[in-house]
Length: 489
Length: 103
Image (cartoon, each protein chain N blue to C red):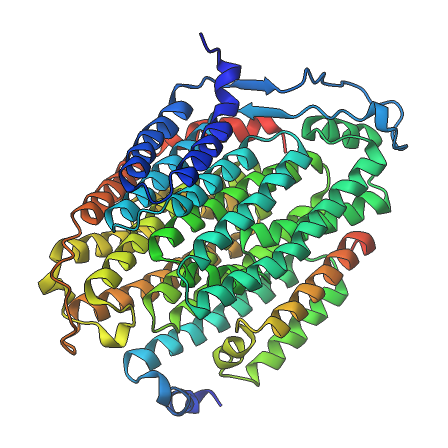
């Protein structure tokens, strides 16, 4: 019988095995479809049944005290990889696997059955899971690299010039950020001789003030965090990826980016827990991203680009929670990441449906959509309210907590910033809603073959989830808050 | 400058559609100014540094003379690899200066 510690790595290993399997079965459509659907059920099931705990891959012994810190003694380096699974990981994993499931179902429904394409989705799922579970900083780095490759593969599968360009640029900056993360890890390894995050955290606390080499590592790792999260100055590159991927894939990419943002911020806070300047720097970049993302979103005239900028600015809002730095604010930030990915996923799925139905996502060319697809229009209106933080939806609960946290931390200006972002988000998306569904405009060609039953089911499930979380926020928020308090950051 | 802002937007938005396009661009302009004002207040109130305080005031004053700002922001926010590389290099330098210099 499997015990709990065996189930934890299955969240990474199983998607990887299934990715290899569906890759081998490429062009055998029925087999790929069957294996994909069975795999998705298993992927959602595993995080639900797995109990909290730690999985040791190679008998890693946790070290308590670090009397002698500095020299790099390779035999003393603890190479054991550890995966830890707590309440936050559980919630994030469930949300991630469900949205991955919806994305795969959409892909299968569009008759785009490709073993390689599904394999890339599974690899990106495995990588994001490993990033959230890893308690080893090198293991974390390896999976960020795999994630970048899988994401680029998903984008270039669109096979047009713009998607190739977007993927290429993402890869170029991925090499810069990957190199900076790896160099940061190497510097930490040089100073402390440790790769395990808990051990590193203990060693840095025991070592007192950070020396210049460790401070350089902080700089390099922060740059890596900005890239992985799609924050300024990488927001345009990330936006380009969302815009040029198929919208249902963008729904998945934005989930992965925000969850990696959360996972890496937690790692940075754990490792450099006593370093207050890190929080201020995070806050600065987060505010920049919020401002630029929302201002740019307002000016867009193409639905996918508009949603991409909204997704980026919302990622900035998640980072604002981390930047404020109190337990309350960090918990609110993580809570907002969960709420936001659900609302954004609805909007990207709607963009996908609009593209299939009307063959365009240019707002000027769309109009009168409410007469064709009233349910989708109604759900888009609700999703707009949800993402703008209007009660009783979920984002209201997290944004309200962020405003409270800002006021409690003595920076009420950030509360005003959150409100302004909500207004900007609402204006940007309601403009798109009006132009797609209400504007009496040119009669666009409607593809009557696209019924979108699957899309409609997915967006209704997601909006109901948003409503449920908005009405009962404590089911999600309380475990997150307890987890953040237990971190002691 | 501020009283001519609608005309400026009308002129600049010719190729991007009128009406709602101008409205949303104007909204983004006012949002941008609000963000900057709040940012300046935040820095002036919380930063315990004369340099940062003066810096915030100078940037705020400078921006008021460059209204409308959104078109300049849009120009800087393109996916050009040159611009992006420049900002990445600038960010890395800034991170090193902040963390190692301890501003």
